Length: 565
View 1 (tube, rainbow, N blue to C red):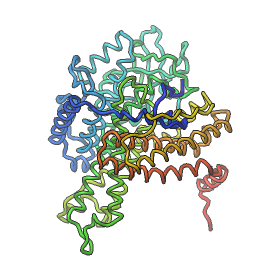
View 2: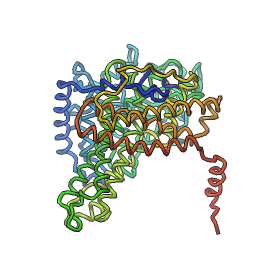
View 3: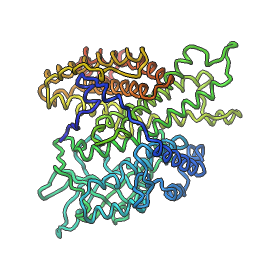
View 4: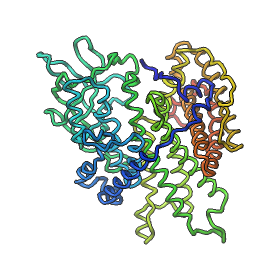
């Protein structure tokens, strides 16, 4: 149950040492009719938000305007993927991504609210619910754009499998009574329906995790003051208290098999399929928006600026920064297109969607850091300071804070790398430790549409993929008990990052071959050159793991406050 082991995918082939160009040869494209529909939705959504949210004021007050929900609901933004038959916009997943990204280019907090509702909200579970009162309630809420979200994280920490919140069946057997505390709940201040996790007490499911759809107007529910974060100022996120909340038995979402804390229940296929798609909306879309904003900010900064009689944009390292940012932006686009436009069974790209959370947020962070360094040549000044001096603000400080939040939203980045590697990289090797047979050569297996330099990059990916597969096989053989390898988080994290780097480079090349444009071919070359350096460093870590004993010893001394005299 705990391995996300669907049908063979591009990522699985890369992890197995079989980089399969035929999987990339027909890189997914959005058809013209759907693209036009998405463009219209993007324009409408952007106009609504621009007329509603004063970004500097939100940054100053850390609050969205009091009336911000209604205009978004009136524009159908809480019904992006809801079918037209239920009164929704009926957008495709990729168009929903485009709309959310466009919203985030103006203001990330309301975009995150829309994204969480679209991806993690109750309507995402409709295809999984059997006919009955719960499905009817969720469908009605979806049609009415009742805002929803996921109430899972607790004060004990999101990484824990066990939930301190409890659910016990009442004496009549008609209701579960929920008691507990939740924290960092997106949309809690504005939600009308939340999916709540709790440990069941009593009965045949005693000790297992239960999932409940809970209307927020039930007695015993209290929403606390909104959390104040490093970034995402004004985002509707708050703690939740449940005291004797009576939830009808029919409102429990029964998962088969039942969710045991002995395993990582969040990787149960149905739940994982929802969450990895949701992060495309909640993380990948805002990350792409912030990356694009950085390009705009850098362009404005460089325009007309000269140093010692030479255009600043003509200096080598400045060109490197701008080029690598453009390549990273193309990489984010390639990942999003692959994850949301690939036709057929959505399970084909669930592995890639799981990887996309860290790929897109970390890529965004690289771009922000480079752009920050570029602008710091003039002075690392806040927007308030610039305005006070009569200069035009650029908004990069806000972008920096919001981008940092994306790296930890939905899971701290290093733990997500570990989590991903345990399930996506090493899990399949424990199921089938035999090395993959080499692919038979064929004309179709050779890359088509790539420039000569990018053909060499594809060959490098093949060599790296084969090396990685053998390294994973050896590590699994050396750790017959999965729990032992899971304890080596230095190895799992490096493996997770290596796998994500391989995937992104492959997707960038696939996208470049499909588009055939000079810009994309250049971007692919720049991206793959930088990725090769990162892969080399990760390969060294996998080949020469750190001394865990030394880390533990120094860590104990550091935490004890020991210092060199």
